[in-house]
Length: 105
Image: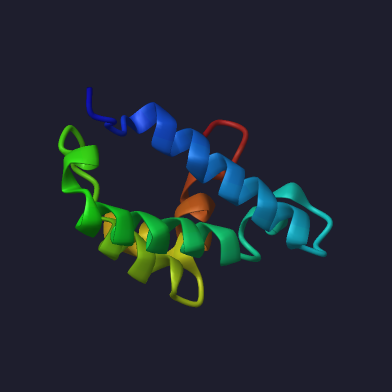
């Protein structure tokens, strides 16, 4: 039987990397900590890029572009980069849209 990754296992591995990054942060707010340091998440993507090249069969049931994810995490603000790609707006612009302007909103 051949080993294969599934989304659940990748999400668990990614969460471990994310928690390591959060622990490295000196920021006080949780949201700021999550968007501060990406060292372990970048390493996670690099390792999976290499492993996928060496053993593509491990990922045959998944459609994940680790190269695109890595390039996004290498930007100054990965969160803003994701929001720009999906919504065409920065994270701050998108969250400002969802804030009610009045009691009736």
